[in-house]
Length: 440
Image (cartoon, rainbow, N blue to C red):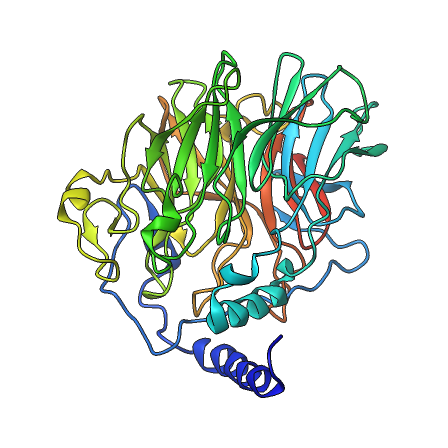
């Protein structure tokens, strides 16, 4: 229990961080400089306080929607949800939605006064609500682009996120474990108890989301596990098997690190042309408006991508203790997605038959939006075109308008998924809506 004096001091500090931190630094480069295969990496800019400029959570006015790009239309696929974060399409076309948020932190893992202050800041962005801890099933049986069925599919979970169906087993990545349930095609609710497949790193859960994909043959599961800190400031003992993609054998529960040095790997999907695993990664904060760009990259088994000792290859971060050997191993990512955009959702456009042909070969990315940047970035869904299995060209806006004229977040995009008909679905965890984007 904090004393009134401590709370008063913390509240004053919070106001100072928001009031002064919002002005700290300043944008040195245009937003576009942080995108593409060769982003600009300017000099580090650190102030006494981190830049804090988060869009306060609002809500969509009656009848309002995001703005679809020319040639596209957007409509609400489902409304009235409770913090929808992640999407998964079942083979019969049903859509599973993980309604989820961060789990409570153990008392000794809250990060002290700084953690309390940042928790209050994030609450302004709509991230302070309790986790619903469930998965909802949405069904659009008549194919009109609106789900007429909504049911609680799984309840009593622990901050669920990633989902994957292999044969008749549905795997769910909770914040602390991968669990499995029996699944029968067409069912709208699962009452069976969970079977634990493998434990996952938990504890402080600075980054709590655990994304999940199955290998195409179903013999392995891949789980994205974010770091327990910004740049290792809580000690590397807390980073064991974190900032990594873990490979799990679902038959035995055995797990190993598939790739590491990925500060917060979230959206994952298989490249339909090359068969490679691709991932969207959130990079580190507090060294300037333009550092460090989030990115997406193909993932090589055993590869190391720099965190916490370097970024974008061998660019050294001087905050952690020096480790030249690990820096020398660091691989440069394939494609930058802009500094502090919080790029979370990632899905390839294969099968998007209701979208223009130009949006079928490439990747859709849900950008949740910045907090550590004086000029906000992200808060939209973009598309990156691919040619011959590789990124080829600048990103294209697909869905914008999540910020209103007062700078409030009417919504924030997270997970992205192609539906059975070939449209794009977008989970909006502030607007509590699943948006559907199709050709005009």
